[in-house]
Amino acid sequence: MEEAHSGVCGAHQSGAKATLPHKENGYYWPTMVKDCIDYAKRCQACQFHANLIHQPPEPLHPTVASWPFDAWSLDVVGPMTKSSGGHLYILAATDYFSKWAESVPLKEVKKENVADFIRTNIIYRYGVPRYIITDNWKPFFNSLINKSCQKFGFKQRNSSMYYATANGLTEAFNKTLCSLLKKVVAKLKRDWHERIGEALWTYRTTVRTPTQSTPYALVYGVEAVLPLEQQIPSLRIAIQEGLTEEENARIRWKNWKPLTRRDWRHNKGSSVIKLDCLRHSIRKCVRILFKLVI
Image 1 (cartoon, rainbow, N blue to C red):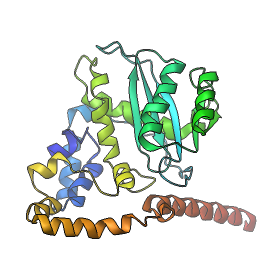
Image 2 (cartoon, rainbow, N blue to C red):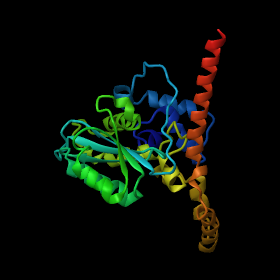
Image 3 (tube, rainbow, N blue to C red):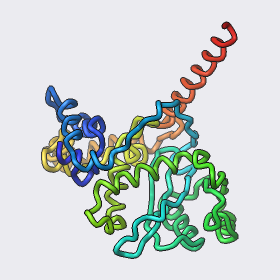
Image 4 (cartoon, rainbow, N blue to C red):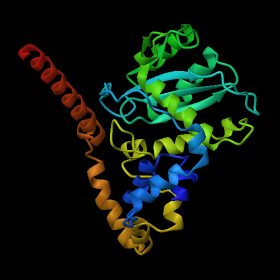
């Protein structure tokens, strides 16, 4: 429980989310859910930095992308407490399909930094997207970014600078990232630029509500191996260690064949998102019909 909640891959997730790694990796004991929730309630860092949600839940309005890395949203977090390296801002990007996130610390936000981030952290790693969503802030909306759009062949869409919900995916990730960093940084809070990688790993290996899957699994097709599985071997680790090289090669070849014919239109995350949209549309129609009848 300690490793799943406050370890390298935990970053003080809630009790319910701390239970998921245990279930997925084959761990079980009768009071597992209750024990994880009680452990999270006793965590001092969570008591200081956990979110107090007063607003009632509302239906999600997801933007459906066609495949992973088809559309990205970009935003800047900050200014923050100045780090020991002189950083004040975080430039963050989130993929609309898989919810995969990338971010880097910045000392100042310049158009050159944004263009380099798009080229290095998005295009060179995950391919050319169809479009990127940003606000109208100068570092995002300028001639240098326009040249990048023309060079690589992607489109830029702009949202209102003073209407945060127009680019809700990035705003939600920014909130989650700041919450994770608050729980893992040292007391002086000046090492946050060194902890971004840890926070990103936690985010990528945690089940996201819109897709009901982890970003890591949607991107790579398999769950990440966490430190918890090395300390107490999970079922897949135990099976792998008992295989010979010939058996391992046979299983890998068997699993590789379906990957060559993978069609992202039937991806788990896409189906979940489309189903959520359908349910929301049905609810709206029912409410409208109910009002007409009354």
